[in-house]
Image 1 (cartoon, rainbow, N blue to C red):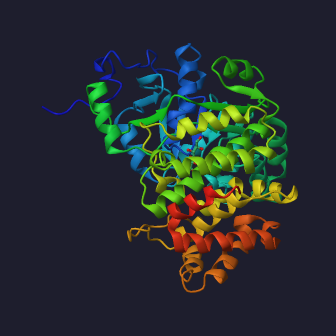
Image 2: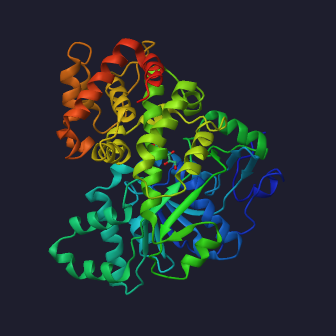
Image 3: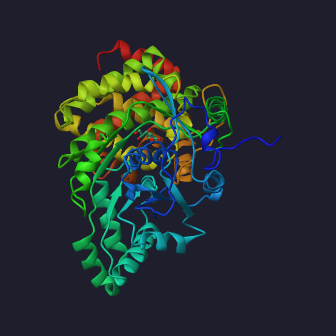
Length: 470
Ligand code: CS2
């Protein structure tokens, strides 16, 4: 007998303990085009939109766009856009099948479909999770071409919400659109300016890439096969600037637990520097020591203590989010969630694009106040060690990073000529910005910790570090 697979037709057969959508996307067209149909969107915004749809507001169905790879889109199509999400935290486990994903496209091979979706009369929003490296002229061109169709057709403008881990993400998105537009687009740019809104947005939920283990757990929970199942934590946060084409969206989103505010900046900076900054540090430490998951890192006393101190001493003093202590304590708990199995190599991916948002602002803040930045210096030293591409047990790993070649070229000679390699890494303005490469103190401290990392190993260095009151 062929195995039963999750789809609209088999939805009634899903175990009753699983929450499934009662609504169907029958005659309605999607109101949201999402660019970057990865795991994160499906377990975060898609679940918020699912909540709105459950309440009967049918304007929140999603046209999900995979930016490059057709693999996931094909699997989702075979399941009519349905997939299960395991939500696990201290209060227990729940399985959910969100029903918000109604249509899908792949940007590289089905560009016309994406443009048509952007230009559909039903479309009201575009959301984006295209990752840090996705803010390219190609993305800008896709948006320009789609918006041109809307403009020509005399349709309304759109709320275009970047949800990537970038400070001022709405401004960045708008800036690349301006940079990619030509003089012939002058009219269109004026229309975009007047009729589209680019709210900045901070999104937070830990959603590891799908694994076989989660697929097996989904099969057990659903009573059928689901090739697109995901696992996430109970916690989620979405803070978005009160800047919408349709102002009444603010109240709707607020009702679902989204924080609509004019103060996104303070949430963004706290999240990028505390959560993501700690994540990058732990991911690199885990990769070099051979720990597979973030929970393994935070489970090691010296790494947990290091992360706690990094947040408390070097990140928090420069934040405007006043409830940072609660946020920090919640993060330590979240990192330890045993259900998440969040791979350190997944987070170490694209470190060259992530570190600039995550570490330098805190280091510069500490330098500015004449305070110690030893935790970040140690983390930067581990980053250099990571570029060797082999862990302390001798196991090789790949560097998945648009800068992989240049990073490996810098890191290769670090055992023979460590000081020169630290200098080469720290002189890169693409990683550290224009100010930090001028700091001799920073260079000196990273060089010091890099020496320790090479001689004591990462765990030994951390244990030694914690005996100091840095
Ligand atoms: C992580 C983020 O992969 C990474 O770089 O730091 O994806 C992180 O899990 C999310 O931003 C959490 O909201």
